[in-house]
Length: 495
Image (cartoon, rainbow, N blue to C red; front, side, top):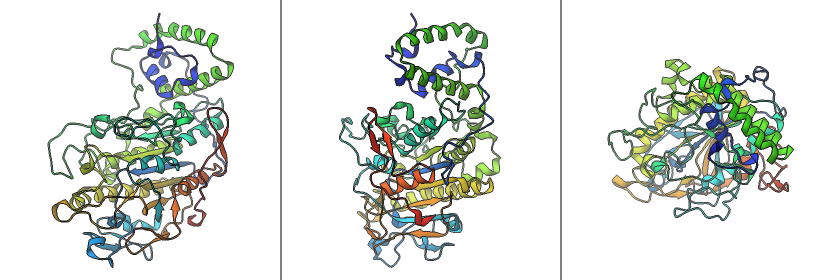
């Protein structure tokens, strides 16, 4: 008796897209079955009232310092303003860090929101920034950082659920919600963290992102802040930058003849399923199956994942590191039709490897973090503009928090601790007025002075940009209506 997917299922609603792709990649379904190509050339617009067709969410996990990026305070005492000097931008009144020269020249393309804030002053703010909701109580393991089934759904998962509903029985070639280059926490400390905020939560695993997997390659030791084995800093080879979803590539040795012989297994599976599943769940199963088949067989997703199709000069412009190439892949996913794409700059080996600048702030930001952000994000704006995609793509770039207004240490161990009470976000595209700012912080960049922006406000802005009513409702697992945002107000003034 064959146990497909490794275990019995009482109904099909618990089968995720990842599992279907794994099964398809193993050769059970797609390659020997009729191709479903009819819907491929005619892409529908599920959210016709939105300013944006897609969202590219650039997530700088760890908490970039506002005082070393987009909210510098050169008039503040030296213990506050930090080691770097500001430079002028194309935006009147906006001075940003001297190590962001390309973003200074591109400031006419984006708006700096300087007053984002919340009260979750630790890295579990990954839930707050990606869902717009406070972290619910749950058993999260010894480190208290792992996702739980009762978490609020991420913005991407909500968008995926609306995309599914809008698509109805039509077949999609590209998932609605994609995470690049890894699931949040998968690359950090050998994947021991399963960071909250990125999943469908109570909305169900079928709305989880489809995430690529870039394995961290072992390398040589380096300095504390720019180690040579950190793929976000160093140049990566083409062999390392193989953006693939797990299960998309058939295992070695699976031939077309072997696939043909396995078709009967599919018929057995479907026959058993029809006896157990309700008509509603069976319809959902068939739609999900057809979509996965199309992803496997149409070539649209496979071609979009092939980053080597891009010109060398453009890849160099983004930077050959993992962050720059992930931004380029994010653009390719948006261009292919993905609705919500998250590109994360994650930590790899603890705080010293990312934006969590408790120590070595000066060196890490000067040598690695700021140059990588400057090159990659400015290239993204330029590339989207050149391709005519910026007008229909909302770009949001932010961390989950900022850093303390004063240095905690000085000298070789200079740094700042967590500070979620005032930090910046960059918004661009989809009608956002470039060359502008929104909100002002106080003289130490510690608290909003005017126009504070909450995480629910940011969430409402994203939803409204896509044509989703931020004041509407979404059904929970029992079908009860739940408010889409926690009282958030869209930032209409920046459009």
